[in-house]
Amino acid sequence: MQSGNRPQFSVVVPVFNESANIRELHRRLTEFFRPRTDSFEIVFVDDGSLDPSYRILDELRRADPRVRIIKFSRNFGHHIAITAGLDFSRGDWVVLMDADLQDQPEDIAQLLEKTQEGFDIVYGIRKERDDPPMKKLSSWLFIGLMNRFAGAEIPLNSCVFRVMSRRVVDHLKRFRERERYIIGLMSWLGFRQTGVEVRHAARFAGEAKYNLRRSFRLAFNVVTSFSYLPLRLASYTGFLSALIALLLIVTLIAKKLIFGIPVEGWVSAMVCIAFFGGVQLLCLGIIGEYLGRTYREVQQRPLYVVDDSNSDL
Ligand code: UDP
Ligand code: MG
Image (cartoon, rainbow, N blue to C red; front, side, top):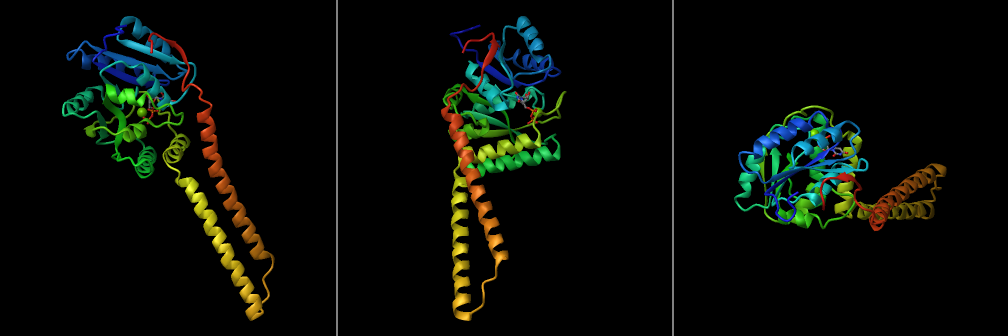
């Protein structure tokens, strides 16, 4: 489809078990763009859905040549799906949004309007967020970590829903690290960025795929992929405990030699062993995390495997 001449807009949508949302999303996106332009495409990335999502996408693409599908061979995760969508997208402007209609397709208007002022990235900021409290909390914690460790300046309520220019997408495509958080990478990238308020609704249908464990994992990834602070903390802890141990030894010797007080036996020994054992394991664990990450990166495996697609890269 239209290779050579780029569409004006691409909408990139990661899909994982969203069969109840896809048609509605497609309808509202088409309704949104039709009066504005004919030159748009919707890039759906089926991230190994186990429900009929792919069948529905396939039907849509038969009926609408603007629909492009990248079907993964298995589930690779939200941010990898977004990455594939960006890789395949061709539009001069690329809109990123989830498939669950928590973000309103009609709000793309506000995002696009802001790009007129010369911004390369315009992200949505959720006014009233319709998520369970736990989800909000983990998301705030997460963005807080990004800001602290990745040197990002991301408003707490900003979301994946956003629009970016072709040059931003082209730069993002050069990032090939495996552990990735798109919002963090985009913030790292620079260019002129801003946010506008968007609405946020509960899911149209289906269940959220992020649970606490996943969110925690993602938060940990943020800290370790953008900073060496945990490694440094390990060194600090080691240094501090060595210092405490040294002071203890000096005190014990002083007690014995100057005051003749006998050194108390096994209790202090046990406490020391447990303490230092713990510190050493902690430090080893932190080093191991980075080593594992380095190993994953040097393996240079592809980020994702495409099973079927009606699009060329
Ligand atoms: N998603 C995906 N792969 C996954 C999990 C989620 O492509 O492994 C998609 C999902 O279909 C949705 C978006 O990522 O379009 C956000 O997922 P979800 O709504 O579960 O996250 P939340 O809104 O709770 O952050
Ligand atoms: Mg959602």
